[in-house]
Length: 91
Figure 1 (tube, rainbow, N blue to C red):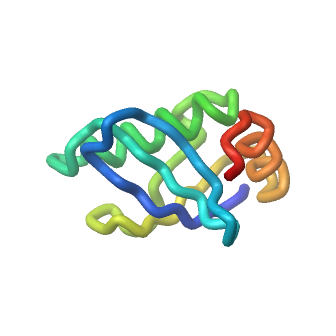
Figure 2 (figure 1 turned 135 degrees about the horizontal axis):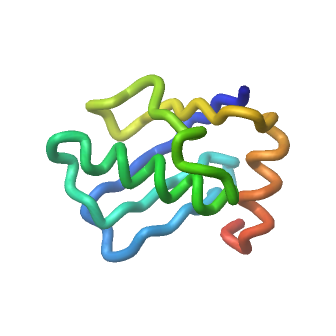
């Protein structure tokens, strides 16, 4: 199981995942931070980008914060970073 720290921006103009020049994973979601909507959107978006089912991605820390820790089942950290970078989302 891999865990990654992400910085989430809710109410963005589009859904996207970026890795900045410092290696920080940034997740932008259209959903508002109300009733867990943004957290669900983050889990779904990251799962889609990684090509895995959404049940394998869980916000494990930071449910009420912009800084979150995601737990990703059945992938290593390197596999996660490689798949995100392979999506053409590397800045």
